[in-house]
Image (cartoon, rainbow, N blue to C red):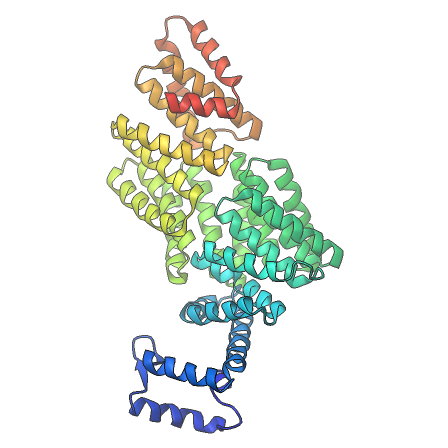
Length: 481
């Protein structure tokens, strides 16, 4: 394919390699052994560009460059759900600068906007897996804006859905929901069942992230029904995975495990490493919440090995966090810190605000277990402030429980009761029971705090005051405590 860019009517295709070798001999082209690529010296590149401008050839050359890398991106995308995805992810990473240049030419000159949009769509999975979330959103925003009056097309629906998925990963739930809803409208108009399912899937993920579990279940179940009608095994596995996550969050661990095991079995047959690692992590999370830490660690480590091979930075960060939680639960504080800090570095590179907020909470819990209450308090403050910025009530509910435990340990029993009450109401509102591996400790802590209060009526009154608070009031009380 590369010869299609450089040769034209003046150069026979069979002459290209000989010409390239001649340029290397004359030191006009350099071969980079480490990258396995040829490159022009900067002075030669600039000279050649200037000559193309003078000869009026620059536009046609850049059009050919755009066409070539559009074809590469679209072709690679067909392999990103199969067993060969690692090789194609590496190919796209290697050509990332060329792909950026092609997208820039398409957008700056508004040349072939439909092709540019198709190219951006083809890169969505690459951007997601390799953690180029902000960049991907920026390109999709630019490409979508080039054709605001464009007729609703499948590629536009794909672009909106892809942009919504990337927005979700950055915890921009308002944008994610709006983009996926717009995608769904287009897909329904076109009668595109596969596209409808893709939009429903992402809408379900966004709904679940905001605690709208019933809405999420409706989206997932409609999606699963469509997947089964289409015989789409990849889609069936994804829908089962998402329903499994929903069951896990509702503490229905037997159902969650069964759904994830069914999803994992399909993914092993399909040979999709990215999704395989996702299933392993989700099964590990179920095992962790059931206090089966040996199984959790084994599943997390198997998934992490796959994520490292793929260069899946988001997955690596999440699984390192998971391994840190297992280590913390087992009393391995140094191991927990190593995993948490490694995860935080990646999350900061990705700009994952929700993940960073969760990591501060985990680091705060680590400090709490080590008796460093001042440090724990500061980290909890950071975490709850960032969770409020993101607008994630689910994470805030867990954080309130941690802050209440800290307050009780520091003998602020009235404050602890108030915050526990607020956390309890939030959990009830969103249908989120306390995970099995945290339940006995929670019962013991609350029981000990109640027993330490001379008048249990005062404890109960503070608890009810907490239950009556709005989310914002609960956050303000927690920050004050």
